[in-house]
Length: 240
Image (cartoon, rainbow, N blue to C red):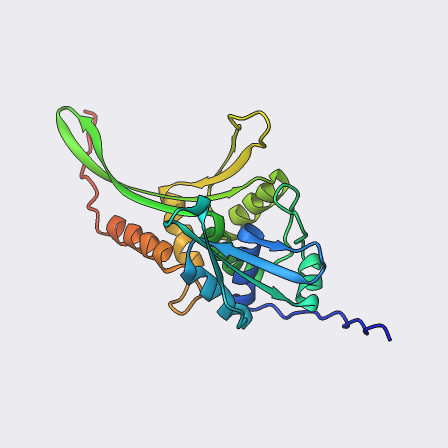
């Protein structure tokens, strides 16, 4: 007898599920076999967080780039037909890198999805800029940026619109042309200091959240350093 097909299951959205979907959107993959789901990362902590979010017990595999004994890559693979089919209904597909568009995440959980997207392929950058000179004086300025990237124009334009609307911030959408004519352009959402100060507390809205600890630490370091900065005082000139 043929094996009976499992019925379709509609998964209820939670903060943990939305975060895991964000990770799958960036660094995950649906196998063409219609059953298996893969997630890969250079951070073993992120692999474990992903497993916890989906209650996966599978052991993570490890490989080394080009046979070198550094920069290991970790991967977890598991089979779940019902989750696989559900992920397809919200916008994920096999070989999605260049074709993914909208991911149907409820607005209520978008910031959790966005945090997963950030931990997957995005970055938080904070540093002190000590190279601005004015009349022989050296001014130190804190720089804080958040970046989201994608090889799919449809996806990055959708993400850009959602971030701008739901977080209420200004962002820049940048197209980086490839140096190799055989490659596709990379699309970048760049969020500068003022908007980053609004976005980051929005996505890190409480302590107990699934996240990549080192990225959150960089974000908090930047937010705290900027909060302690003293604004320069200026004398108001009154015309007489």
